[in-house]
Length: 244
Ligand code: 1GP
Picture (cartoon, helix red, strand yellow):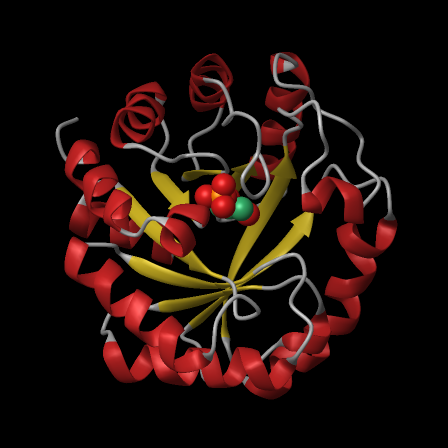
């Protein structure tokens, strides 16, 4: 069993809270993490597409670790911002990037850094689904082999590739604060085709939406914007997820 599978067997479906170190001072990030942990979140993810300071990542992780016991997982946008005080790292490839640096070269160079830091890796296939008429930050930053909101066949193809290359989980993301989350039909089709843990994020802003993703087959729900803008919603999401 990989670590995500272990957590799933221990806790049931999981909720991860994403904190962007660029959005608030480290001490405030620590307080947000503490609130999310009280609501029952299972891990704090630290990262974001626009992270720009290694020191901020380090300090943010340090403040979070002072206040919570749940694991802290780095969600990196570059090898430049890796730190050794988090518990885990999503060692991930943006599989549907048509830019090889996000798919391969950052990871190639990053591997040596990860070895040096000694941080535990969670090999992750990451795919971005384009659900919005206006591109999200991640879509603006990278050239994608676009997977549209209804492009189920293509999403399944990438999901199968992820499983067949030995990744420990698949993270399907609609990007931060998109027009709409990934559709339930897409989650269901992917779930029917793969057996590795399925992480779904992007645009999940209320309990019912989160529950529907779980019912469709998601194993982990990630919320970021809700943590930043309306943290009480995290409690509602976790409560609703537990009903499944
Ligand atoms: C983005 O999946 C995360 O990478 C979170 O998205 O900010 O829309 O919750 P939101």
